[in-house]
Image 1: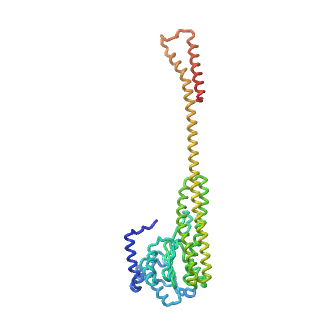
Image 2 (image 1 turned 135 degrees about the vertical axis):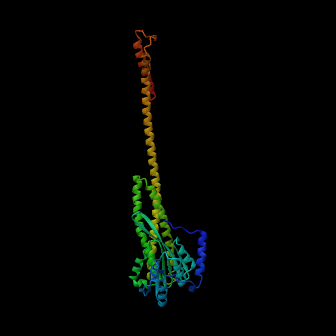
Image 3 (image 1 turned 180 degrees about the vertical axis):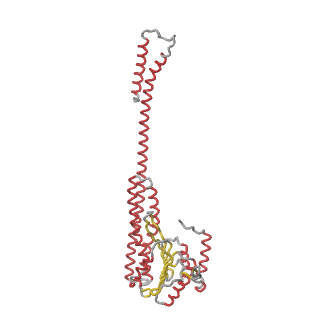
Length: 384
């Protein structure tokens, strides 16, 4: 199901409200109030998937709310906060924007979602939009999700719109590699990029299997194959939109290695991700080309099949016409003696040659001559 998009007037009004709110001093923007259970006690908002503070690559605390996260981070000057959100509320994003000085344009994008993959730098903060993908085996289709990442000097905020990717696995991997995690927020960004790109591999395998099946169905003449080709082509357009911008984004990151003094080991990791993205992007381009060619071949085969059916119908009509000719010719041949016999069978008293001795042989001979003449005429016209 597609979410309803806000109208232009409504969207512009909301943007103006967000800008006014984000441009206020931090103290004027209260943190998101915690949800309340039926008994009145505070509970963790469901949009906060997980929040943790790290120092030297080791988790030191796991705050339950945004307010606790802010307080703990202020107590850890050398620490790093990693906050994971899933479809957050407007209040939560405004609270994060006020606390970490996020740019209003980036916050607007995170609220709206439906963004193209991109990388923007706002001062010391990187804003990254990624399109994750996963292959669903049962319906044999590709499901896309959207991930927004804010990377600052001492924080990483992930805003997820959709089921993919599973960032809990990324967090677990980084916590199992404290030497990598202690490199800071850029290392977390690498891990997220690597997870999104690795998630493309099962999609590529699933699409390759679909294309192999489609090729078999095309030459087998399956009636629903054209629809399947069209649907898979649309998914490849979306897949291409998700992967192609990543190549430029990663090259942009690599161009800033020297300026931002990125760790050499992290540089190697990011180059590896860039290589994988390039390979995936080339595969997706190949899939689109292959589907275009398969669609052309399918159209040709369908046209040939239709021509064969029309030819078969024409041949059947020709054969039927030949049979009608034969039947008509024999009917005409048999009609002549029937006509003569019918006339002489009327038994009127006053009839020509009724008492003529040669009348009977003459009538029989006349019928024979007429039949032979008609036979020769029809034979010459290839009716017989």
